[in-house]
Image 1 (spheres, rainbow, N blue to C red):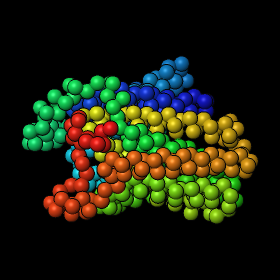
Image 2: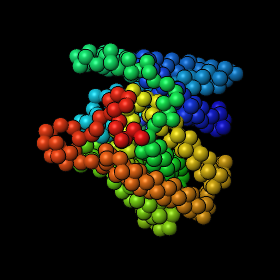
Image 3: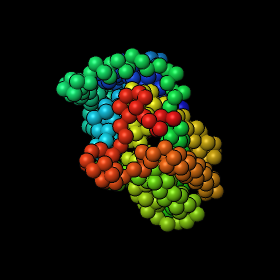
Image 4: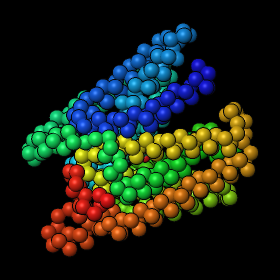
Length: 411
Ligand SMILES: C[C@H](N)C(=O)N[C@@H](CCCCN)C(=O)O
């Protein structure tokens, strides 16, 4: 397989994901969590099976089409599954440990990446590529079984609360035009998320090469470990960040703070020779707090009935932003060979582009705070403060469970 074909396997995953999540979010709102959990986890099993099967056609013209089809199915299923996961999490943890629940899902997804990083290569060396790919399929089957278990628990819980019928009634009313009714705070959150990730994901993708090109004395493996520190920090910190945010609230303030504190990361990388591990750990910290404050804010500003559509749309905008950011970075770095050393001035331009995205993130998140303040400070309310005000100790967030319940937040 040529490098272009290999990269195509990644590109098809990202771009189909970006398109499919909008439709998937809408379908989940319309047809329910159980439909989404079943269909999309089955798609990941099918996709990984087709991909693994494709590896048996090495040297034949079927190899690439089969692997591309596998990635397409897997990408569509996996991205959509995240939307159902968020929708179920938001339903059960709204007004409680929402940021912790989101943080834990993030930690587990990072754990998957870290385990993959450490073990897949060894597994492949011992058992060969085909068994490794079928091992991946087996993991997807385990995911499918877990998804079915969640589905049953969700149904039982809904029945116990007597909410099953109500939610189904609300789902029937969901229309694609509801996108127009998503509040301004939602769109500002989407921009905040997009600009933040525009800096993080494309940087991490190129960080290993950057470290080798700019700093002396780093082997390829050492550079990869240092780049990976962004995600390692997030694995360790995401849950703790969630606990803190659930306790103090101030999600909008955290969003601005994380963006502002990310500026020095790119400035250090662009203009100094401070060891890169300082920057990657620092970025890991701001990224963990940003993810734990930004994503769980979405369920607080949109009704549960349209949450799938809202999450799908936010993910899509984020992925399109990151995809475009990758293209800009590729253009700025201007080389097709991973062997050649890229001149430092080009890396500096890339970091300046990252800084520009971070500044845009600050502008979007400051605007978010201003609008949130005018509309009742749902995002910035502190849990403790709100409980004291009501004197009942009940959850702080105005939980917009059904449509039309968002109050001034729905404007
Ligand atoms: C890759 C995916 N679009 C993504 O950005 N995931 C976030 C977490 C998203 C949680 C809510 N969907 C990440 O930081 O990995």
